Image 1 (cartoon, rainbow, N blue to C red):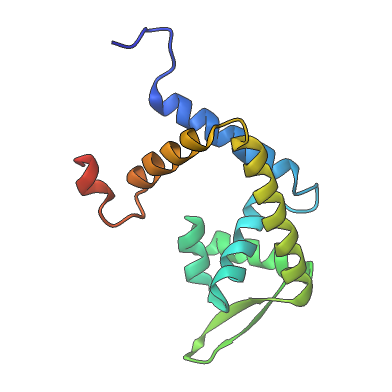
Image 2: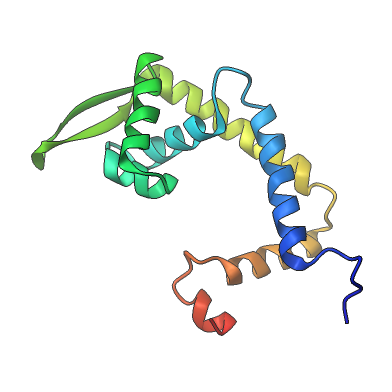
Length: 148
């Protein structure tokens, strides 16, 4: 039985996630918010992307995605162009500068994660990866394995 003074699993997980996010955000510098960096990652890792897809991936309203893309476009990190498959829609693509910034963002994220998880043994890291994969809602069979 868990001691009432001990944090619950959800509190521990959220605390670890916040600490990792703070570490990662510190590596971005003052010019790029974590939200904008996530948008760059979505666009950069999915190629030309519609605003609706960006909104879905960021779990924000389409109007908010437009604001994010406006900021990135004003900094020269992305461009918009007509979707070749649907002339009513627009796609967003990284510029060369955006690709360079994304490379820096990805490097900062990797370095932050390596530093954050560096205190774990190889066995602990593998165990944590197994547990998190099992709990990941994006994993098609996660809910069936966890009994949800």
